[in-house]
Length: 216
Ligand SMILES: Nc1ncnc2c1ncn2[C@@H]1O[C@H](COP(=O)(O)OP(=O)(O)OP(=O)(O)O)[C@@H](O)[C@H]1O
Ligand SMILES: Nc1nc2c(ncn2[C@@H]2O[C@H](COP(=O)(O)O)[C@@H](O)[C@H]2O)c(=O)[nH]1
Image 1: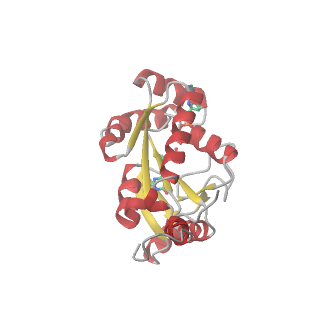
Image 2: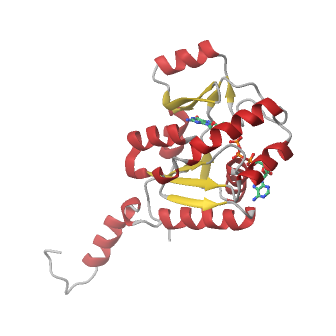
């Protein structure tokens, strides 16, 4: 049975290369009730990325204007570039009854939580080892040695924020991690405070009992 509920703002964070894009893509492909928040970024496009799908690729002046105009729900400097979550798409998705998936760093998760509080569910993904993290970054073949070194150098800092999250998973095996993420989303969707349709449903159930106490 379907009851109206508040949308979940589902955040995935991790050190670069731990697998959050991989998990996000699997979630989006398997569940039409959740849609991706498409960030704006000033970083250059990678091979295989599409403007407007993976990110909105913008120059620094455009980004600064968007920030000054209040167009971002949150934004941060990451790896020497600016990244931000456009407010409009998130609001449209929530109004359409969707859950929203965010692939953002710990600074973004913190700001989003300040904005949207308990509607936000924060999941942090750890790699099994730092050697495996570096191996994944290299195997992805999207970044230069210099970029990979910078991402590895920042990984410890990113990981140090693990305790600001509601759930922490170790992505050793993609399918296992994906199953855990799906279980979290499913349980969060079922939380009583998100099921706004429950109030009317329970009231109608009670009123349908002729012998019920009329003050209930
Ligand atoms: N459990 C896993 N085992 C082996 N390889 C994995 C696993 N999870 C992801 N990968 C691979 O590791 C690489 C990095 O994954 P991905 O791009 O999803 O990381 P990310 O956390 O989104 O990184 P970034 O923050 O830089 O976008 C990809 O090539 C992906 O296929
Ligand atoms: N605070 C935000 N962080 C973001 C946003 N979009 C992406 N990110 C994070 O940046 C790094 C690097 O991403 P990459 O695509 O260049 O590898 C990663 O941790 C993302 O989660 C955002 O809108 N806000």
